Length: 179
Image 1 (tube, rainbow, N blue to C red):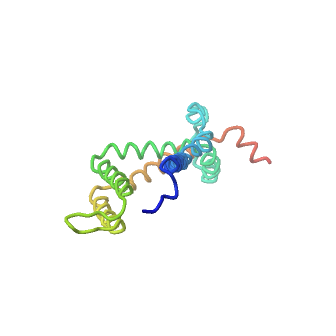
Image 2 (cartoon, rainbow, N blue to C red; image 1 turned 180 degrees about the vertical axis):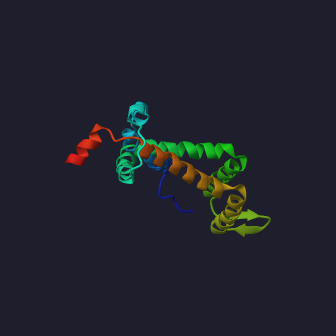
Image 3 (cartoon, rainbow, N blue to C red; image 1 turned 90 degrees about the vertical axis):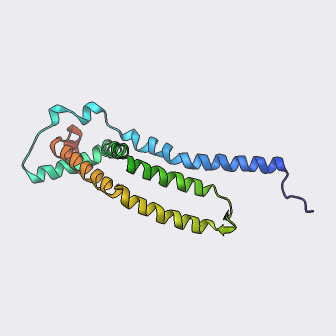
């Protein structure tokens, strides 16, 4: 019998360190998102400043407002898209079920170690992922996810472009034009 390269305590310590590194890497995206994107979140009062709402029929003026507001309020607009996505997810049972099935299934498949034996037949993980992907695509087509995605895109575009077109740039926007 051969001796192991690492003692069981060392192997356990290395394994725990690897899990901690994976968890830190997994959540580092959320920390970076919070620190970089959400730090640019503009206050609710500034985003809905009624004194700055003004309709115009000049397309060059609308374009100027779009250029300024889409950059200035980009994080607020991202939260609008996120809120519409969450609403769409919870407003349809089949879309919610399909997303849960997709995420949960791939999570469970990622936990499978080695080939899966079913009734004497050995199925490797590549075949499991392929079969599950095909099943998920069929479920996505029948559950109406594509309609939900297009609804999110359309509703978000309408809300965001309307808001960006009617909100006059703030004083800081006027100083940017002069420089």
